[in-house]
Image (cartoon, rainbow, N blue to C red):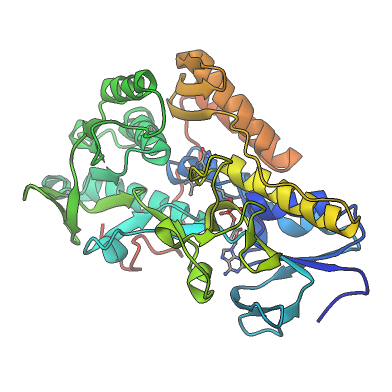
Length: 428
Ligand SMILES: Cc1cc2nc3c(=O)[nH]c(=O)nc-3n(C[C@H](O)[C@H](O)[C@H](O)COP(=O)(O)OP(=O)(O)OC[C@H]3O[C@@H](n4cnc5c(N)ncnc54)[C@H](O)[C@@H]3O)c2cc1C
């Protein structure tokens, strides 16, 4: 099915890559079909705030049709892409007719990697999607409700929260969870000894925030420790079970909650394509971000094993997806206009991670490093700018202001129709 006589660009995924590619192409002479398995664009950098009751799920999601619904040449489709026939230029969608393309932009993102560690798939909470965040929020709040009813369960690890992975997500989650417990749940549960709750951040390397400068890593470590987070560096998890974590040295921790932020791999859609793959199953691409031998197929963002102009692998972060999307869209436009195309060149905008209230590390290109309140304010500003949708920005800003002034995380809500564990059983 091709919507019209103009070149048809199919974009798979309405994440950071997909929406930026659509924006860049929609004023051009194209028919665009944007396909996503969800009807919203999710702002994943704030997912941990949904998991820790700081924001509601709708605050960080924006309906895709709301972004492009009034554009006659943008066709938004809800559907799960199950494969691509590269020779016949067809995209397969589960339970629906195939969609043909002249150009294809694959931007389906990533999924969690369990690194082959037994029990991760069954017992760990992933944090990649909105349902993941709501499930984790339900679970944490349910653990406190159960501990309030049966305090003897606390000794069995009911209020022990293990976070696997000391990257930005693990650090941000650790800071926010310790604040949720210390500031809100301590007030909500006056009869429970909340000091028995613990947040344990486990990292196999000897530092947090890989890729950041050593001074930022040390600052993050000190700040988390000051918040009462038990940070365990040089510690590797060897197995998970329903009520405990086992470490490589044979020691164990009783816990009902392990959040897995440690591993990332390409979206499973990559496995469906018979093309060369790199680390984590990510699809290898040319310098133009196209599939080797298929210049009409662009692969961008987390699903792509893209590199900088020195051949160094690029990280799986939003800026890489956004800039890759703009590059793919501009290349398509240049080709249509008969102009020469250019190789992809990535420009780093720096890195940042928040550690909690008035605490963050931000590294700006040129060597400037911001910490504490300044780092935190710059983190807030950048996230508000990139958050899609005026309403979302206002709601998030109001929530943050409310939280800052009152120390109240308003979304402490258990949605009972959602399961409280990754495997769908109520464990807590
Ligand atoms: C918890 C978390 C925190 C993060 N924090 C930061 C941060 O602070 N800063 C930063 O730069 N980066 C951060 N990232 C990484 C950043 O979000 C990603 O690098 C970025 O989203 C990649 O963009 P993308 O377009 O490749 O994929 P995504 O934005 O993930 O979009 C992929 C889209 O594809 C859709 N999709 C997937 N499979 C299919 C299918 N089979 N059919 C149809 N649609 C499909 C998904 O629904 C999704 O909408 C974070 C990620 C997570 C999970």
